[in-house]
Length: 161
Ligand SMILES: [Zn+2]
Image (cartoon, rainbow, N blue to C red):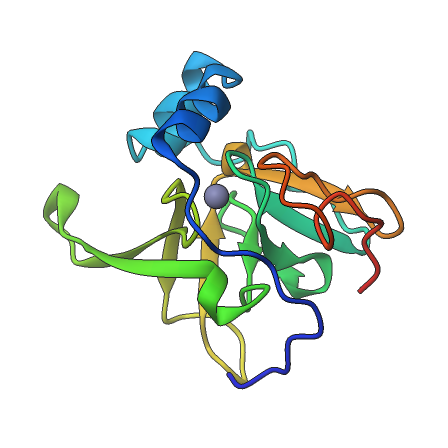
């Protein structure tokens, strides 16, 4: 849990104006997922079979949230990861909806809903980050990271893990 982070991302939240701009770029379905804490049906996400090296970024603000190498086949029908890109890139929220106590995770920078974290993942950490495909975008190794907030490097630069 104390991974050394080689590159620092600017975690300053977007302004209300920037958030409005980013949200205007979403489909109705994406808006529901990201801003109204929606949940997509299992086995329909576009990243379920994605196995390349690269980085998964927040669909709304472009912050890297997971690395391709941390993705595993959980059999649940949602993309699942063993660890976040960096601890401080995700925020936990206690979710008591549907009569269950779960830990919801949101993007630490823009607050967009990502999914839930469960304590039944593979060792050593034993965590399973269960994420909506629609909350993420994928940048394959060597391609340019998104820079949705025009923050500059490392955003907008080629991604190498
Ligand atoms: Zn975000």
